[in-house]
Image (cartoon, rainbow, N blue to C red; front, side, top):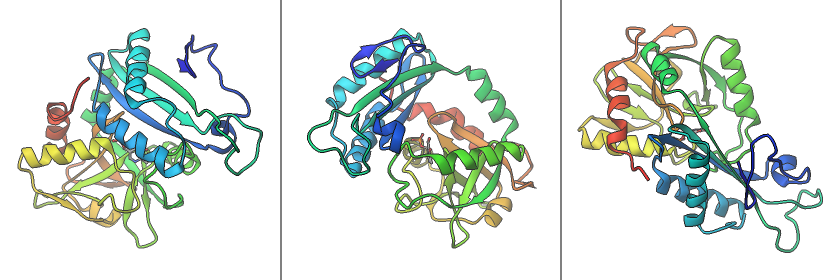
Length: 281
Ligand code: PLP
């Protein structure tokens, strides 16, 4: 792990107990896919990271190019070929007080990487995952990739306890916003791919943005609009996207089978084609 300027064994790596990330979840993070030892879509992840920091007025701890070097180095030291790299930046260490610390406190930087067996993702994709719906209970600034994830933790746990893999939030108007750690998509019976616009209610996913480019290039009809769980249940297909899952087919929502109950052809094609449109570094 990289912690504030030092590469350390994961078992010894730690942060100060007065770190604001620990005490207030006063920080942001990114998760980037590692494939063939390369980082996937780093420039877009770093741009979103910069935006998240700006929205929370956390100083950039180092130039983005240096952060990128650290992420590559952590991947290399862990010999990760397939997996993820995790980056977290908190506002730093200060005596506990809700308001921002006075003076210039150095933000804390933690980077870790781990291997994920690609066979596991392939297995899930071949079977398709189940989702449940839960009421949207997160703060309105879900566009910021904040480490404050308690509602997401509880939603994911509710999904697990219901025998599902992901939970989709439903807003007070009855529309799906996104998953607890993924963006939500459906494919209509007319073959249109639909996902909620990133104006409100969702994190602007990097996988989502790359997939939009892929849809355009593949000339697949695409619509950005909100949809309800009922529409999803009656759709031809559904899937979720995230850096850690790429395109993952969804075969049931709240116990209702979607389409044939098997991963749909559009989702599988997009999963297969995705990395043609991704940037490797
Ligand atoms: N929405 C939420 C709430 C997430 O936590 C994530 C990723 O973890 C996503 C969407 C997907 O974003 P990305 O494709 O950048 O991984």
